[in-house]
Length: 365
Image 1 (cartoon, helix red, strand yellow):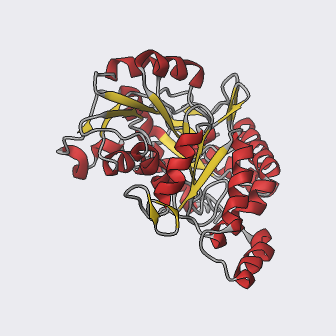
Image 2: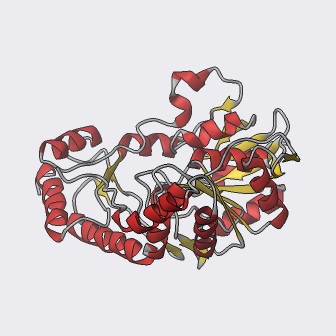
Protein backbone atom coordinates (compact mmCIF):
# COMPACT_ATOMS: atom_id res chain seq x y z
CA UNK A 1 0.00 0.00 0.00
CA UNK A 2 1.26 3.46 -0.91
CA UNK A 3 0.38 5.41 2.24
CA UNK A 4 -1.47 8.72 2.21
CA UNK A 5 1.22 10.06 4.55
CA UNK A 6 4.55 9.00 6.05
CA UNK A 7 5.98 10.11 9.40
CA UNK A 8 9.78 10.26 9.54
CA UNK A 9 11.45 12.00 12.48
CA UNK A 10 14.71 10.06 12.54
CA UNK A 11 16.72 13.26 12.04
CA UNK A 12 15.65 14.32 15.54
CA UNK A 13 17.41 11.46 17.36
CA UNK A 14 20.40 13.57 18.42
CA UNK A 15 18.25 16.39 19.82
CA UNK A 16 15.91 13.99 21.60
CA UNK A 17 18.91 12.33 23.25
CA UNK A 18 20.22 15.77 24.22
CA UNK A 19 16.92 16.49 25.98
CA UNK A 20 16.85 13.12 27.73
CA UNK A 21 20.41 13.56 28.96
CA UNK A 22 19.74 17.12 30.14
CA UNK A 23 17.02 16.05 32.55
CA UNK A 24 14.83 18.94 31.36
CA UNK A 25 12.08 17.12 29.49
CA UNK A 26 9.10 19.44 30.10
CA UNK A 27 8.92 22.97 28.71
CA UNK A 28 12.44 24.39 28.64
CA UNK A 29 15.18 25.72 26.35
CA UNK A 30 14.36 23.38 23.46
CA UNK A 31 10.82 24.79 23.30
CA UNK A 32 12.26 28.32 23.13
CA UNK A 33 14.61 27.23 20.35
CA UNK A 34 11.70 25.72 18.44
CA UNK A 35 9.56 28.85 18.94
CA UNK A 36 12.28 31.12 17.59
CA UNK A 37 12.67 28.96 14.49
CA UNK A 38 8.93 28.81 13.93
CA UNK A 39 8.52 32.58 14.33
CA UNK A 40 11.11 33.04 11.58
CA UNK A 41 9.11 30.79 9.24
CA UNK A 42 5.90 32.75 9.92
CA UNK A 43 7.67 36.09 9.65
CA UNK A 44 6.48 37.35 13.04
CA UNK A 45 8.20 38.29 16.31
CA UNK A 46 6.41 35.73 18.45
CA UNK A 47 5.61 32.02 18.31
CA UNK A 48 4.03 30.47 21.41
CA UNK A 49 4.22 26.67 21.47
CA UNK A 50 1.31 24.77 23.02
CA UNK A 51 0.33 21.12 23.41
CA UNK A 52 -1.79 20.77 20.24
CA UNK A 53 -3.38 22.65 17.38
CA UNK A 54 -6.83 22.70 18.95
CA UNK A 55 -5.33 24.31 22.04
CA UNK A 56 -3.76 26.96 19.79
CA UNK A 57 -7.22 27.90 18.54
CA UNK A 58 -8.84 27.74 21.98
CA UNK A 59 -6.15 29.84 23.66
CA UNK A 60 -6.22 32.43 20.87
CA UNK A 61 -9.97 32.93 21.25
CA UNK A 62 -9.75 32.92 25.06
CA UNK A 63 -7.07 35.61 24.92
CA UNK A 64 -9.54 37.90 23.14
CA UNK A 65 -11.87 37.87 26.18
CA UNK A 66 -15.04 37.26 24.19
CA UNK A 67 -18.35 37.45 26.01
CA UNK A 68 -21.17 34.86 25.92
CA UNK A 69 -22.99 35.18 22.62
CA UNK A 70 -20.01 36.66 20.75
CA UNK A 71 -19.63 35.05 17.34
CA UNK A 72 -16.85 33.61 15.19
CA UNK A 73 -17.30 33.25 11.43
CA UNK A 74 -15.47 30.28 9.96
CA UNK A 75 -15.58 27.59 7.29
CA UNK A 76 -18.04 24.68 7.41
CA UNK A 77 -15.58 22.51 5.44
CA UNK A 78 -12.79 21.79 7.88
CA UNK A 79 -11.62 19.36 10.52
CA UNK A 80 -13.99 19.42 13.48
CA UNK A 81 -11.29 20.87 15.78
CA UNK A 82 -12.05 24.28 14.24
CA UNK A 83 -15.60 24.15 15.57
CA UNK A 84 -14.72 22.39 18.82
CA UNK A 85 -12.24 25.14 19.67
CA UNK A 86 -14.84 27.86 19.15
CA UNK A 87 -17.28 26.05 21.42
CA UNK A 88 -14.66 25.28 24.08
CA UNK A 89 -13.74 28.95 24.21
CA UNK A 90 -17.41 29.77 24.86
CA UNK A 91 -18.10 31.50 21.54
CA UNK A 92 -20.82 30.93 18.94
CA UNK A 93 -19.94 29.66 15.46
CA UNK A 94 -21.36 30.99 12.21
CA UNK A 95 -20.39 29.64 8.80
CA UNK A 96 -19.68 31.25 5.43
CA UNK A 97 -19.55 29.19 2.24
CA UNK A 98 -16.27 28.26 0.58
CA UNK A 99 -14.81 28.53 -2.89
CA UNK A 100 -14.21 25.33 -4.85
CA UNK A 101 -10.93 26.56 -6.34
CA UNK A 102 -9.08 26.92 -3.02
CA UNK A 103 -11.39 25.05 -0.60
CA UNK A 104 -11.27 28.11 1.68
CA UNK A 105 -13.84 30.56 2.98
CA UNK A 106 -15.37 32.78 0.28
CA UNK A 107 -14.95 36.51 1.00
CA UNK A 108 -18.21 37.16 -0.88
CA UNK A 109 -20.04 34.95 1.63
CA UNK A 110 -18.55 36.45 4.78
CA UNK A 111 -20.38 39.79 4.93
CA UNK A 112 -23.80 38.10 4.94
CA UNK A 113 -22.85 36.27 8.14
CA UNK A 114 -21.67 39.33 10.07
CA UNK A 115 -23.96 40.40 12.93
CA UNK A 116 -23.52 42.94 15.74
CA UNK A 117 -22.22 40.04 17.85
CA UNK A 118 -19.49 38.98 15.41
CA UNK A 119 -16.04 39.50 16.85
CA UNK A 120 -13.71 37.07 15.05
CA UNK A 121 -13.11 35.96 11.46
CA UNK A 122 -11.45 32.54 11.38
CA UNK A 123 -10.39 31.54 7.86
CA UNK A 124 -9.12 27.98 7.45
CA UNK A 125 -6.09 27.62 5.16
CA UNK A 126 -7.14 24.18 3.99
CA UNK A 127 -4.83 21.55 2.45
CA UNK A 128 -1.82 23.88 2.41
CA UNK A 129 -3.00 26.96 0.50
CA UNK A 130 -4.06 30.16 2.24
CA UNK A 131 -7.49 31.67 1.97
CA UNK A 132 -7.88 34.90 -0.03
CA UNK A 133 -6.31 37.13 2.60
CA UNK A 134 -6.13 40.02 0.15
CA UNK A 135 -9.89 40.37 0.47
CA UNK A 136 -10.45 38.91 3.93
CA UNK A 137 -8.14 41.33 5.76
CA UNK A 138 -9.99 44.45 4.50
CA UNK A 139 -13.31 42.74 5.26
CA UNK A 140 -12.24 42.11 8.83
CA UNK A 141 -11.05 45.70 9.19
CA UNK A 142 -14.32 47.02 7.78
CA UNK A 143 -16.36 45.12 10.36
CA UNK A 144 -13.93 45.49 13.25
CA UNK A 145 -13.14 41.77 13.44
CA UNK A 146 -10.04 40.08 14.77
CA UNK A 147 -8.53 37.54 12.38
CA UNK A 148 -7.63 34.18 13.90
CA UNK A 149 -6.08 32.02 11.18
CA UNK A 150 -6.64 28.28 11.37
CA UNK A 151 -3.33 27.57 9.66
CA UNK A 152 -3.10 24.00 10.97
CA UNK A 153 -2.27 22.65 7.51
CA UNK A 154 -0.39 25.60 6.05
CA UNK A 155 3.03 26.03 7.69
CA UNK A 156 5.21 27.84 5.17
CA UNK A 157 2.38 28.81 2.81
CA UNK A 158 2.25 32.41 1.64
CA UNK A 159 -0.17 34.95 0.18
CA UNK A 160 1.54 37.61 -1.93
CA UNK A 161 4.78 36.86 -0.14
CA UNK A 162 3.35 37.10 3.37
CA UNK A 163 3.32 33.91 5.42
CA UNK A 164 0.32 32.12 6.83
CA UNK A 165 0.05 33.02 10.49
CA UNK A 166 1.11 36.64 9.99
CA UNK A 167 -2.23 38.18 8.99
CA UNK A 168 -3.68 38.05 12.50
CA UNK A 169 -3.31 35.44 15.20
CA UNK A 170 -1.95 32.30 13.53
CA UNK A 171 -2.80 28.82 14.83
CA UNK A 172 -0.82 25.80 13.67
CA UNK A 173 -1.02 22.07 14.34
CA UNK A 174 2.03 19.86 14.80
CA UNK A 175 0.09 16.58 14.76
CA UNK A 176 1.79 13.46 13.43
CA UNK A 177 0.52 13.82 9.85
CA UNK A 178 1.26 17.52 9.42
CA UNK A 179 4.07 18.90 7.23
CA UNK A 180 5.96 19.72 10.45
CA UNK A 181 5.23 17.35 13.32
CA UNK A 182 6.12 17.00 16.99
CA UNK A 183 3.71 14.01 17.34
CA UNK A 184 1.30 16.27 19.21
CA UNK A 185 1.71 20.01 19.49
CA UNK A 186 0.64 23.40 18.27
CA UNK A 187 1.91 26.96 17.78
CA UNK A 188 0.33 30.40 18.02
CA UNK A 189 2.00 33.18 16.01
CA UNK A 190 1.49 36.90 16.51
CA UNK A 191 3.11 40.31 16.04
CA UNK A 192 1.33 41.62 19.15
CA UNK A 193 3.78 41.77 22.09
CA UNK A 194 1.04 42.04 24.73
CA UNK A 195 -0.95 39.16 23.27
CA UNK A 196 2.13 36.92 23.12
CA UNK A 197 2.89 37.71 26.75
CA UNK A 198 -0.69 36.94 27.77
CA UNK A 199 -0.63 33.61 25.92
CA UNK A 200 2.64 32.57 27.56
CA UNK A 201 1.24 33.29 31.01
CA UNK A 202 -2.06 31.59 30.19
CA UNK A 203 -0.41 28.36 28.96
CA UNK A 204 1.53 28.03 32.24
CA UNK A 205 -1.38 27.91 34.71
CA UNK A 206 -1.52 31.71 34.72
CA UNK A 207 1.99 31.97 36.24
CA UNK A 208 4.51 34.55 35.15
CA UNK A 209 7.04 33.13 37.60
CA UNK A 210 6.76 30.22 40.01
CA UNK A 211 3.65 30.76 42.17
CA UNK A 212 3.20 34.27 40.79
CA UNK A 213 -0.32 33.93 39.41
CA UNK A 214 -1.72 36.67 37.18
CA UNK A 215 -4.78 34.99 35.71
CA UNK A 216 -6.79 31.80 35.78
CA UNK A 217 -4.69 29.83 33.33
CA UNK A 218 -4.27 26.35 31.90
CA UNK A 219 -1.61 23.73 31.29
CA UNK A 220 -1.18 24.29 27.57
CA UNK A 221 2.59 23.68 27.55
CA UNK A 222 4.64 21.83 24.93
CA UNK A 223 7.52 19.68 26.17
CA UNK A 224 11.18 19.88 25.21
CA UNK A 225 10.94 16.29 23.96
CA UNK A 226 8.26 17.30 21.48
CA UNK A 227 10.11 20.45 20.45
CA UNK A 228 13.23 18.38 19.74
CA UNK A 229 11.28 16.39 17.16
CA UNK A 230 10.26 19.51 15.27
CA UNK A 231 13.48 21.53 15.09
CA UNK A 232 15.24 19.44 12.40
CA UNK A 233 12.09 19.49 10.28
CA UNK A 234 11.86 23.27 10.47
CA UNK A 235 15.45 23.43 9.28
CA UNK A 236 14.52 21.28 6.27
CA UNK A 237 11.12 22.85 5.62
CA UNK A 238 12.10 24.41 2.26
CA UNK A 239 13.33 21.06 0.92
CA UNK A 240 10.31 19.18 2.31
CA UNK A 241 7.95 21.71 0.75
CA UNK A 242 9.75 21.59 -2.60
CA UNK A 243 9.37 17.80 -2.65
CA UNK A 244 5.64 18.11 -2.02
CA UNK A 245 5.37 20.74 -4.77
CA UNK A 246 7.21 18.51 -7.26
CA UNK A 247 4.95 15.60 -6.39
CA UNK A 248 1.83 17.73 -6.77
CA UNK A 249 3.04 18.93 -10.17
CA UNK A 250 3.63 15.34 -11.30
CA UNK A 251 0.18 14.28 -10.14
CA UNK A 252 -1.55 17.17 -11.90
CA UNK A 253 0.35 16.52 -15.12
CA UNK A 254 -0.47 12.82 -15.01
CA UNK A 255 -4.16 13.31 -14.20
CA UNK A 256 -4.78 16.14 -16.65
CA UNK A 257 -7.63 15.66 -19.08
CA UNK A 258 -9.69 13.07 -17.18
CA UNK A 259 -13.37 13.78 -17.68
CA UNK A 260 -15.05 14.58 -14.39
CA UNK A 261 -11.85 14.97 -12.38
CA UNK A 262 -10.80 18.43 -11.23
CA UNK A 263 -7.21 18.64 -10.02
CA UNK A 264 -6.22 21.27 -7.43
CA UNK A 265 -4.63 24.53 -8.53
CA UNK A 266 -2.24 27.06 -7.08
CA UNK A 267 -3.99 30.41 -7.32
CA UNK A 268 -2.16 33.59 -8.37
CA UNK A 269 -0.14 35.24 -5.62
CA UNK A 270 -0.17 32.16 -3.40
CA UNK A 271 2.33 29.45 -2.61
CA UNK A 272 0.98 25.98 -1.82
CA UNK A 273 2.69 23.66 0.66
CA UNK A 274 0.52 20.67 -0.29
CA UNK A 275 -0.43 19.22 3.05
CA UNK A 276 -2.96 17.33 0.96
CA UNK A 277 -3.42 16.91 -2.78
CA UNK A 278 -7.19 16.97 -3.16
CA UNK A 279 -9.14 16.30 -6.35
CA UNK A 280 -12.86 16.72 -6.98
CA UNK A 281 -14.77 13.83 -8.55
CA UNK A 282 -17.59 15.52 -10.45
CA UNK A 283 -21.05 14.37 -11.41
CA UNK A 284 -19.83 13.70 -14.96
CA UNK A 285 -17.08 11.31 -13.82
CA UNK A 286 -17.46 7.58 -14.63
CA UNK A 287 -17.31 6.77 -10.90
CA UNK A 288 -18.36 8.49 -7.71
CA UNK A 289 -15.84 9.80 -5.19
CA UNK A 290 -16.54 6.89 -2.85
CA UNK A 291 -16.17 4.36 -5.67
CA UNK A 292 -12.84 5.89 -6.69
CA UNK A 293 -11.65 5.74 -3.09
CA UNK A 294 -12.59 2.08 -2.74
CA UNK A 295 -11.03 1.08 -6.06
CA UNK A 296 -7.78 2.90 -5.29
CA UNK A 297 -7.58 1.13 -1.95
CA UNK A 298 -8.03 -2.21 -3.75
CA UNK A 299 -5.12 -1.25 -6.01
CA UNK A 300 -2.86 -0.42 -3.06
CA UNK A 301 -3.07 3.36 -3.31
CA UNK A 302 -3.78 5.06 -0.01
CA UNK A 303 -6.24 7.95 -0.09
CA UNK A 304 -8.38 9.98 2.27
CA UNK A 305 -11.73 11.73 2.36
CA UNK A 306 -11.08 15.04 4.11
CA UNK A 307 -13.91 15.74 4.99
CA UNK A 308 -17.01 13.59 4.38
CA UNK A 309 -19.47 16.00 6.02
CA UNK A 310 -19.74 19.65 6.90
CA UNK A 311 -18.86 20.21 10.55
CA UNK A 312 -22.41 21.21 11.55
CA UNK A 313 -23.96 18.16 9.88
CA UNK A 314 -23.17 15.82 12.79
CA UNK A 315 -25.92 15.02 15.28
CA UNK A 316 -23.86 16.16 18.25
CA UNK A 317 -23.97 19.76 16.95
CA UNK A 318 -27.46 19.95 15.45
CA UNK A 319 -29.25 21.26 18.53
CA UNK A 320 -26.37 23.26 19.94
CA UNK A 321 -27.44 26.93 20.19
CA UNK A 322 -23.80 27.97 19.71
CA UNK A 323 -23.71 26.35 16.25
CA UNK A 324 -25.59 28.45 13.70
CA UNK A 325 -25.76 26.52 10.43
CA UNK A 326 -26.26 28.29 7.12
CA UNK A 327 -26.88 27.50 3.47
CA UNK A 328 -23.46 26.62 2.01
CA UNK A 329 -24.05 24.89 -1.35
CA UNK A 330 -20.45 24.97 -2.55
CA UNK A 331 -19.11 23.44 0.67
CA UNK A 332 -21.84 20.80 0.58
CA UNK A 333 -20.91 19.79 -2.98
CA UNK A 334 -17.18 19.76 -2.24
CA UNK A 335 -17.75 17.50 0.78
CA UNK A 336 -19.41 15.00 -1.58
CA UNK A 337 -16.62 15.13 -4.18
CA UNK A 338 -13.27 15.70 -2.44
CA UNK A 339 -10.64 12.96 -2.34
CA UNK A 340 -7.00 13.32 -1.28
CA UNK A 341 -4.17 11.38 -2.91
CA UNK A 342 -0.61 10.77 -1.62
CA UNK A 343 1.67 13.80 -2.06
CA UNK A 344 4.10 13.43 0.87
CA UNK A 345 7.88 13.97 0.41
CA UNK A 346 8.77 10.27 0.70
CA UNK A 347 7.00 9.27 -2.52
CA UNK A 348 9.22 7.80 -5.22
CA UNK A 349 8.77 8.45 -8.94
CA UNK A 350 7.57 4.88 -9.32
CA UNK A 351 4.94 5.39 -6.62
CA UNK A 352 3.75 8.61 -8.24
CA UNK A 353 3.44 6.76 -11.54
CA UNK A 354 1.46 4.05 -9.76
CA UNK A 355 -0.95 6.58 -8.24
CA UNK A 356 -1.53 8.25 -11.62
CA UNK A 357 -1.94 4.93 -13.43
CA UNK A 358 -4.41 3.65 -10.85
CA UNK A 359 -6.63 6.74 -11.10
CA UNK A 360 -6.54 6.71 -14.89
CA UNK A 361 -7.41 3.01 -14.98
CA UNK A 362 -10.43 3.56 -12.72
CA UNK A 363 -11.52 6.39 -15.03
CA UNK A 364 -11.10 4.11 -18.04
CA UNK A 365 -8.36 6.27 -19.55
